[in-house]
Length: 221
Image 1: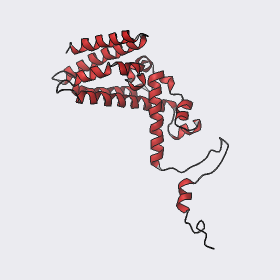
Image 2 (image 1 turned 45 degrees about the vertical axis):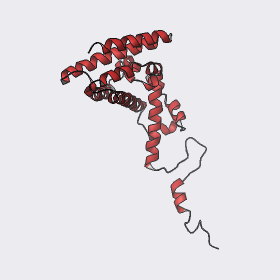
Image 3 (image 1 turned 90 degrees about the vertical axis):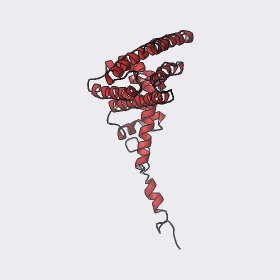
Image 4 (image 1 turned 180 degrees about the vertical axis):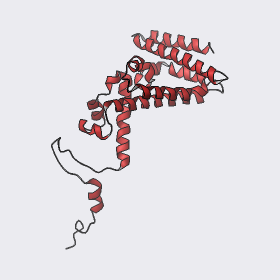
């Protein structure tokens, strides 16, 4: 009798899954996935860790927590990252990319020459202030980043340089030097304002701090 399994009819299915069953953590289930699946899983882990780090601090990216959120075991962590520091740095990079994209979009939606005003209004919005997991890593983590391990500092600085490079085209000023001065003045003010506002338990007070900083910056350039 013709057997479709013996004939190789289901061979692609067996190759795609290749499962070795085990109920022992020392002998985990082994599955063959496409490279895209591993990349998607890594990105899912990084996005979750990025939100946790901005909301809870650098220690918020606990390996067990982020792996559980991704539906994976603790042991699978090292298939994606060399160390926890690698995950922290990747999560910071993700956080910077998210806020950069948000601010660039706000700048591009503003009238010509007023992109920096859109950046100020967006950065100092109550929404981002009350949701640090969606906001700027600098406003959430500056003191911790200043105390970060020396081995991490060069990569953190590289992210800051890239941040400045993406914001600079929208800063007020005619020359690069003037735009850089504006960048440091504007972002230092915004970071400090958000940090202070987040300390305050009363929403009306938070709004007052953010509105005062916004008004000050918009009248200063």
